[in-house]
Structures are given as C-alpha cells and as structure tokens.
Image (tube, rainbow, N blue to C red; front, side, top):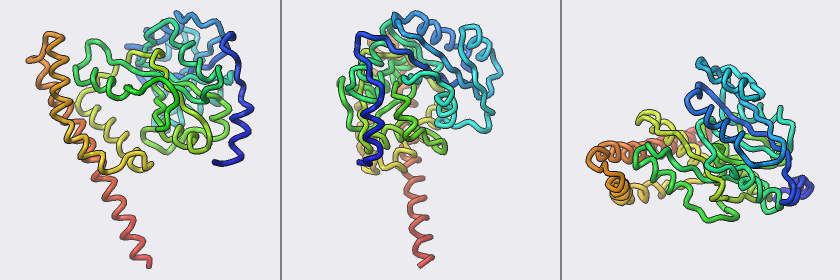
Length: 311
C-alpha cells in the first residue's frame, strides 16, 4: 500500500447518516435528448435534502441535449467531440464540481427510486467505503438477453467488493479520492474499472448497494453492442483484470445463457419472436470476447518479438 495515500483517505470528510451532504452529479452526454429528460426528472424527484449540483459535460450534441440540460438548471460544460474520452470528460466535469461528494450518472440511466441518491451515498457518509456503485436493470422493453446481461453483471451481494467493479453509469466517490489520482484519459473504455482497481490497490474501499438501482436504456444494435463489449474486454485484458482462460468459460456457458434468455422471453409471451435476437446477442457477445482476446494476444506477442530483436 502506498503510504502517501492513507492520509487523504483517513482525512476525507465523513458525515453521519443524519446529515444530507451537498453532492455534485456529473453526467456525460452526446445526443441524449431521448432519455435525458427522464434522468433529470428522476433526480429532481429525489427525497434527498442536501444541495444537488448537476454538471453535464457535452461532447458535441446536435440534438436538443444542451437545451434540455440548461432548462433543467444544469451547469453545461463543453468539450470537442474529437477530444472526447470517457476519463477526460469525467475529469473535466469533476474539476468544476463545487462539492466533495461526486456522483456519476449516465444520461440514459434513470434512477429507479426517490431514495436512489440517499442509498447510493450512505456507505460513504457512514465511513464504510470511499467508492460506491449501484446496479442497472435493463429497459423492460429490451431484449431478454439484455435484461439477463444486466442481472448477471450486477449479481453481487451488498457490501465491500474486492474486485474493481465500479461502474460510472451509476457510481459515487469522494472527490478527495479523485484528487489523489484521477481517471485515466487514454483508455477507450473501462476508465471506472481502472480507477477503482488503482484505488483499491492503494487502500481505498469499494461498496455495492443493490437498492441504489437505475434503469439503463441501452438496447444497443448488434454492431454497437459488439464494439462496446470488445473495447471493455480488451481493456480488462490489458489491465490484467481478465485472464485468457475466462473466454473458454464464457463459451461453455453460451447454451445455458441462451436457454435462460429464451425462458425469460417465454415468460414475456414472445419466445419465438425473440429467438433470433437472443441468439444474435449472445453470439455477438462471444464474438467480441474472442476478437478482444485475439487482439490482446497479438499485441503481447508483437511486444515480445520487439524485445527479442533489441537483444
């Protein structure tokens, strides 16, 4: 553990559960007019009594995203689309935040309860952890595979987590933590995982709160789904969070996952209609895993060849 980190963590402002601390909510956005109104409305409907500052970091929206944000009292910041990175947008937004408690929420995630914010911040305010995240559930109209995907992804039990599972679609952390070491701006995905991995390795704690749930309106088309999963898995390989043996395990689970997806579709009275979408979703998922592992292996081998040539 890096000793220079212990002091900031211990000195971070921990306020008892009886107080509602002021909070800065950071939302990254690009053409999010469809779900942003619901997201902001859900924030306004929170029973949280502390001051809430909303910062929207826009990276070149051409729809009404910025107008919606301004109408709802957001502090809107701008970055050029060509300069966007997930970590960079967050770092910019957090640098302008007034408060010590930071919440990151996706523009297409809608808090599922008026107590979402109180639940999300409780472990930090009680001194149990410095980072917190809550689960996502898919849009009820989403594909059965998408619904089960989120169930699988957020199946952890409430409490401290040893794995770096922070998810910036629905997370909170102390700004003091970010000051010690901000988000990596070079990553194409998983800046949240890398951030929590680094801080866990240096003495911070991560907590999962199942009751702080959001509805995630993802429902990507297959090409977008492939690109998202590919980028996420490739970064996890590069960070050492995923091992290559994990891919065959995922392939072995494919028939089980397809069966579960079809069973859910049957309960929703649409198994035959959903069959093709279920199979496509899971094959796209496996295809992205295989392509990411292949890319990782090729890059690693190329690096070794360069080292041998230098010798």
